[in-house]
Image 1 (cartoon, one colour):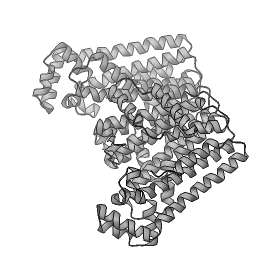
Image 2: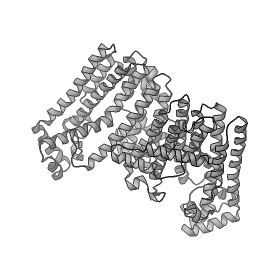
Image 3: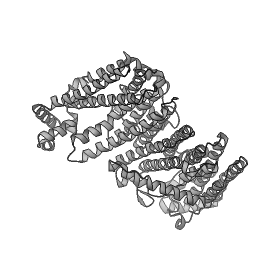
Image 4: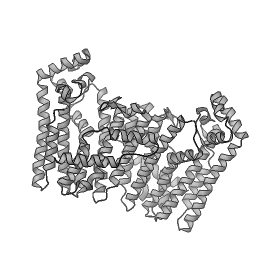
Length: 316
Length: 316
C-alpha cells in the first residue's frame, strides 16, 4: 500500500506546486510536461528512502519533487534530440510549442530541480546536492553515449550497460539515496540503497527491452518490435551480434514489420528471449541480496520490497 | 590594475580546470566554448566583490568560475535558439558539432556551474546557491521574453528594460553579490553591490545598442546597423515608435544597408543617438551614487570604480 499512498501524496504536492508565472511561453510547457502523468517512481523512491531510514515522507517531499522535475527536464530535452513527436499519446513540448521554447523550458526545469533541493532544510542537503549534480552529469553522459552508439558499428555489452546505467538507473539511485540522506542515514546505508535502486533500475530496463521485442503489444501499449524496426542498439542487438555475425545484415536487408518478424524469430531460436529475462532476474537477485543486508542493518525494507515487486511484476 | 590581475588569475584557473572527460562529444564542446575567450567580466566581478568586502579573490574563484560557466551555458543554448552560426568569428557549438550535442553540452555546463558553487566551503554557500538559482530562472525568463517580443507588434520601454535586465544584467548582479557573500558581507552591502552591477550592466547594454547603431564598425568589429537590418526591437526602436508612428513602416519598406542608412538618419534627426547616450549615463550615475554609499559603509570601492570606468569608457 505504501506505493499508492506516496504516489497520492506526491501528486497532491505537485498539484499545489504547479509551475506558473510569466512569461507564459516559458511556464506553460513546464507545467504541461509535469502533468503528462507517469508512475512518479522517482519521488516515490525518494520518500520510501526517507521512511526506510526512520524519516517522514513529508520531510523528503521537496527533494522528491526535485527528482521528478529533473526527470521531466531530461524528457523535454531528449525528445528534441530524438525528434520524438509524441509522449504518452500527446505532442511533445517542442511539437506543441517549438524547439527554442522546449530548450528553455527544460533549462528552467533543471534550475527548478536544484531550487527544490535548496528548499529542504536539513543536514543532508549538501550531500544531496553533490549526489544530484554527479547524477545529472551522468545522465548527460549517458544520453551522449546513446547518441554516439547510434553512429557506431560496434558497441560492447559493457559499454551498453554503462550507458543504460547512466541514462536511467543512476537517477533512481540518486532518488532513493537522497531520501535516506533526508533522514540522516549513515553512509553505508545510503550506499546500499543507491546500489539497490541501480539494480532494480537495470532489471527494469532489461524487462523494458524484453517487452519491446517479445511483449504483448495489447498490454504494453507500444508497437511490438519497435526497437528492432528503429534498428536500436539494445542489449538484445549487441548479444545477437556476439552470437551471430549475420545480425547487422538482417537489419540492413529488411525494413519495418518484416524486419521485426524476422529478427524476433531469429532471436527466439537463439534463446535471446530467455537470456534477457535471465539478465533481468540477475539484477533482481542483486536487489534482493542488498535488501537482506539492509534489513540486517536495521533498515525497514517493507516499502523497498513493495517497489521491487511492483517494478519486476509488470507485464507492461 | 586589479581587472588585469583578476583576469589573469581566472584564466589560469580555467586552464587548470578545463573540462575533459568521456564521452568526448560531450566534453569537447564544453571546453571549446569556455576557451573562445571574452572579457571574463563575470568572474572578475565576483572576485572584485570578495576583495571589496575584505575577502580574498582566491577564496571566491570557484564561485567566480560558476558564473562564467553559467554564462557559457546560456551562450550555447541561445546560439541554437537564435540560429547563430558564428561566435567570436568561430563556428558556434551546434554548427561545429550538432544541435543535440549543443543542447547536452549546455545542460552539462549548467550542472557544472552548480558543482563549482558546491565546491566552495563557506557560510555564504546557501545564499549564493539561492541567488544563483533565482538568477538562472530570470535569465531563462529574459530569453523567452526576447523571443516573444520578436513576434509582437508592440513592446513597451518598461517591458524591454525588464527583459534586458533579466537577460544580461542580473547575472552581473549575481556575480558581484556572490563574491560579497563569499566574504560574508552584510545583507545591505550585498544588496547594494547587486544594484551597482545591475546599473552598470544596464548602462553597458545601452552603450551596446548605441554602438550597434551609431558606432564605428572599424572599432566595434560588428556590422554597423546590424540590429536595424535584423529588425530587432531594441530600446532605440521602441523609443522611435513612441516618437514617430511611422517607424514600423521604415522597417517594412526597406531592407539591409538601405534600411540601416535610412533609419540611422531618421534617428539622428530625432536625437535618439543623444537620448540613448543620456540613458546610459543615467545608469552610470546610479552606479556612482551606489559607490558613494558603499564607501560610506566601509567597502573598498577601488576595484568597482575601475570596472565602471572600464565598461563605460569603451568605444567597442
